[in-house]
Image (cartoon, rainbow, N blue to C red; front, side, top):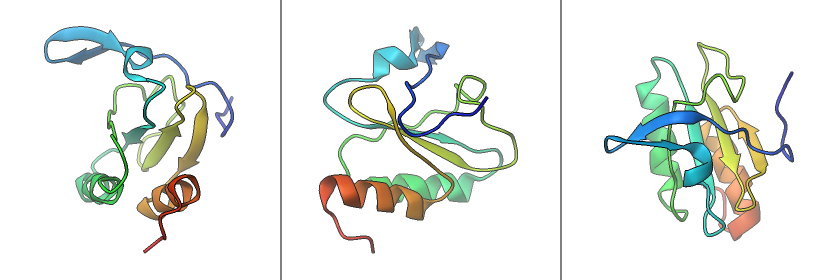
Length: 110
């Protein structure tokens, strides 16, 4: 299968933050979008994505849920989860993040 914008964001249990077990559903809240960045050996791409999302409210980055989100190795996949727990966008680069959030927050794409 594939995931698309508008699909319910999948759960991914077994995530550990600060020594505590948690899951993605516990991180999703109705007060902010969640940005999941999946990348193998792409530290520069991750840094660019983090830097670009810093101008938007609360970005959470995690690579634990690769299997649940059907992400293939060797590429960068960025999943933006809306406040309601549904996928808002699946993009492959920093420009995709900017395009999505520019529509939501009316911030110009630079």
